[in-house]
Amino acid sequence: MRPQAMKRVTLTGSLLVTLTLTACSSTPSEGGVPVGCDSAKATALGGADAGRSLNVVVGRVGVAQRWDVPRTVGRLVVYTGSAAPTPAFTSEVYRLGLREVAGDAHGWHVLSGEDDALRDAAAELVSNGAARYAQPAYRYRPSALPIPNDPLFAQQRPALDRLGIPAAWGKLDAGCAPVTVGVLDSGVSTDDPQLTPNLTPTASWATVTFDTLKQGTAALDLTNKDKTQAWHGHAVAATIAQVTGNAASGVGAGGNVVRVLPVNVLSRGADGTYGYEEGSVARGLEYAVGRTTVVRDSVTTTYVNPAPVRVINLSLGVGTSAWQGDDLWLQSYLDAARRAGVVIVAAAGNDSRDLVDQPAQSSAVIAVGSVSGTGARSTFSNYGRGLDFVAPGENILTRSSGTDTSWSGTSFAAPMFASQVALWMYANEQHRGSATAGRSGADVTAFLMACFAAASSNHAAWSAGAWGSGWTAAIGAGWVDTSAVVDATFTPCR
Image (tube, rainbow, N blue to C red; front, side, top):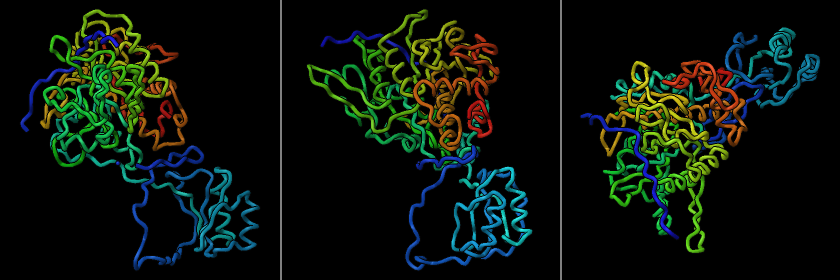
């Protein structure tokens, strides 16, 4: 096999200054009422508590007054004090158009019926003595994610607040399955306690370059241990996944419910410089989604990723000033990943020109530019053709090689946006009754674009795969309010 010619692409972020300084599945909702993430019980009762029975007694007669809190639609819970329903109770339930669906040994009975008639039925059951107490079937959920206590959070907060990320954290429950974002970059350092807890297991990490696969030496636990080269990928990964709420350093935009799979696609060219080749990015895409298969000397080898991703972040781009051509090799992998339901985010580039980089300009990719603290386009950020959204990308406080560092570039706007996508996906797991449940393939990205457009600062219109009113050349559709896209009541996203 002849060596593949390399197309050099560049990092899209620059270092400014060094500062001194876990899952269960959600349950379906009933009647469209969102359901929170249920935390599995770690242990069962044992020892002296084993077999203990509870003495359940209700000392109140009447009907609950609050029907405006989260509850299961079409369900009424009544207390009679008798485990076995009496004939009089059964007769009343039938007369009111209800039916019993569950009960317990203590005299509680769960009834189903038309939701708009339940409150009147509850009053009748109590007033005629068929039940002693009646109430809705309330919905409980774990507490919201905590406000971070990390000392550098205050410095990061302006950028995060512009995207509504801290407010979004307050609407999310702990306990749902974390969303995994694949960061195809220069790898990560292996000894940063502020990052590694929110990375996928090391057995899933990979160095996937053309030369590595060609020589048959790709190892799934192989990372870029050369920290002088890992710095960019580490900083991008930490923007998403830095541990939040441990009273140390800063926070990641993913709020501990987003994981990062590091895939090192960095190669050394013939001139001795580092960059990315389209082959390594393509193979990295395929591996991140699930597996990549290589045929070498008539021998087929498959590399399996045990931690498949739902989002891919590409903080890289072709380093030319006016290239508008298609990379069909890479494009075919981008298209395949999108058809698999993976959302791909890429940095727009830092050339301050009226055209976003490749691969951000691909129709399979969401292109993200950078804005300053005032919300204006960053002077370095590419704009115009191909731009979709923006996020803060100036002086982003993150981590690199075990140190708190501040970076600027669309390389850091992209992972901020990728975090928003992952938080939206996490919220979809929390609200399993939403319209996003069951969506697959490219429909995931299509629905996301409409959702995010509705929550964009420009109130941009997205239809049939194209931008309409509200889109501007400078900042595209603008930045997105994460607090809206994760909200159970925000219709465009549910």
